[in-house]
Image 1: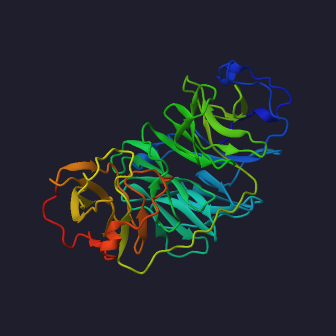
Image 2: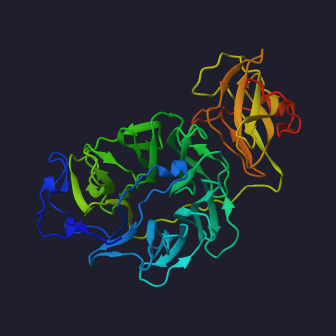
Length: 457
């Protein structure tokens, strides 16, 4: 699309009135920044940021990535019908993006040098590939549309077969790569129910998937990690954050309006973010100093949304994640204590655990049942790379708690959980679980010996 932008920081004086920009006077500081950072952003006639939840396109035709630097504003690439989803390499020299050469082409992942040159295509095929991010060791993570929904994959920049990382019955979209090497992504909660977006993490080999926090509630999405290590996100009520020491969402007091998340933190600590007024005008890019009462205009497109800010700078290489998967056909799951949970269970009430997957029609299918020891521990062998769901039962076979969403385990994965929905930061008791004192052979819950009945379903 042609850029008809209002480059506010480049003006020697802010000659545009606040009413022309559509910004509330109480929320905006008119004076521009003296030395704004260089960044990339996407301009589009319309931005439907949650369209991915239904396997749909987020951008109107003509979406274009622009480079904003001291020389002004110019497209990142030429001769592309559409471009979006920019991600800058760790050395600050290259850019990954989603692009279409021709209007009828599927979205594919491309890489181009910031200095210019011909873009190089990373993915192939007739399916849309979107939202790329750099991983350590010259790998890339992105989402591919498969059978009408988005699945997250990783592939080497040198080529080769992509590795699927998600195995649930819903759409998935990566949003960031954390410093510890995990991939931050969003999907519907409950997984498979297409309800509201929620934030999750997974390692770069597809193992260790979990919700980032267990205090599920209103919609939250577009998470990115800032310098403090916090995850800043957009929620139903505005901006919010997760900290490493608090297992709940913390609201951020920011000027009123609608935020699209996708925060980019500058070297000075300011946040560059998409925002629009409560009158639902176009998204504009604003600079905000956390804790202040005013937003400062950065870029406003005329009759179009300006979204997806990405700083042009070097940034730290995340930790490499060496895979611990084994060459086994299934996976092992050890629960240390099912009573360790945000849900209350009476002592001795949990008698057994059932495991379900989904059949081709999307209906629950029983895989197996295993006993739960007095200390709440159980040990099971489960099928890999398919949706899994846990149900806890009392002695009479009545359901005590049924998992709302789904998780999965990779082939050859060994996973130990502190409890059932206990929260990622819960520490286990320093004791050998009773189930391992009885036997180190896991109960078979791969479906081979499952009952024909589907239990409580």
